[in-house]
Length: 365
Image (cartoon, rainbow, N blue to C red; front, side):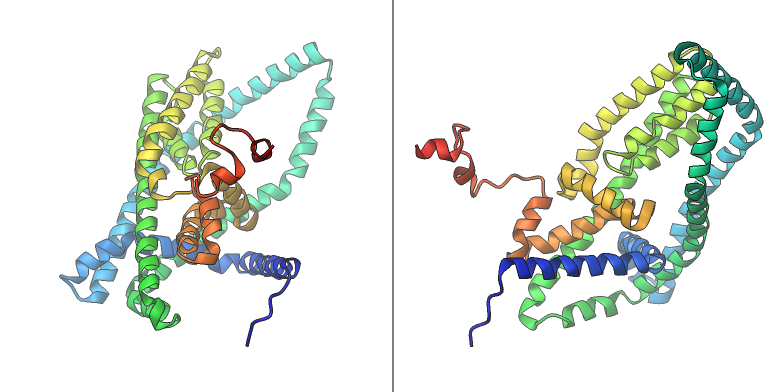
C-alpha cells in the first residue's frame, strides 16, 4: 500500500507547530532542564576520569571520587574569586565616590556642549533605572537560581555517571537492531565532540584569562586578576562575550586612573587578545572540533538567550553540535547538517554559480 504524500505547505505547518510546542515545553520546564543539561555535559566531561577509576575501584566509589575531585577543583576557583571580590568590596566606597565625580563631569560636559540641563539628565537616568527594575529583579532571581542549581547539579552528575550504562542501553534498545551500529557511531562521536568542545573551551578560557590579566597588570589596572578571569569567562560566548568583556576594565580604569591613556591601552590590548583568540587559540582548541559556522553560532546563541537566558547561551553551541552530528547521519536531515557546518558543499556549485563566477542564466544565453 502506497503512503499518501502530503503537500509541502501542510508538512511545513505541522513541523512549525511541532517546533513551537517543543520551544514552549523547553521554556516551561527550564528550571528542571537547565541544571540537568549542565549535568549531562559535566558528566560526559568527567566520564574518562570515572572510567579510569572504575578499573581500580568499585563503581560507587569511583563515581564519588570523581565528583569530589571536580568539586575540589571548582571550589578552588570559587575561593580564588571570592578573595578577589572581597578585596574589590573593601574599596567599593572609594570607587563609588570617584564614579560620582566622573558622572558630575559628564553632566557638565553634556550641559555645556548639548544644552541638556542637569534636571533633565537626572530625570532620564531615573526613568532608565525605573525601567530596569524588572531586569534587576530578574538578575537577582537568576543569581538565587544559580545557587540552587549549584546544589542540584552534583546530584544529577552523580546519577548520570552511576546509571551511564543503563542510559546507553536504553538508547540502543529504543532503535531497531539494524540501526544499532549507526546509533553507536552517533553516541561515540557525540561524546567525543562534547568532551573536546568543553575541554577546548576550558583551555581557551585559561589562556585568554591569563593574557587579559597580564595585559591589565602591565597597564596597572586594579583587580587585574579578577577582571582578567571575568573577561575569559565572558569570552566563552562566541562572537559576543569578547566584546562585552572590554566594558568592565575600561570602567574601572576610568574610575581609578586620570586621563584616557589607560582606557585606550585596555581597548587595544583586548582587541589584540581577541585577534589572537579568534585566529589562533579558538581554531586550535575549539573550532575544528565543532564544525558550526559563525552565522549559525550567533543565531543559536541569541535563540538560547531568548529561551533559557544566560545558561541557554552557554548550552546552545554544544547541543547544536550534537544535532549536527545526528543530522549528518540521517539522509533526510543531511542538508540541515551542511547548513550548520562551516564547509561549503560543491555538489551543486555548477548549478548555482559557474566557475567563471557568472550566474547560470547568463551561461544558458
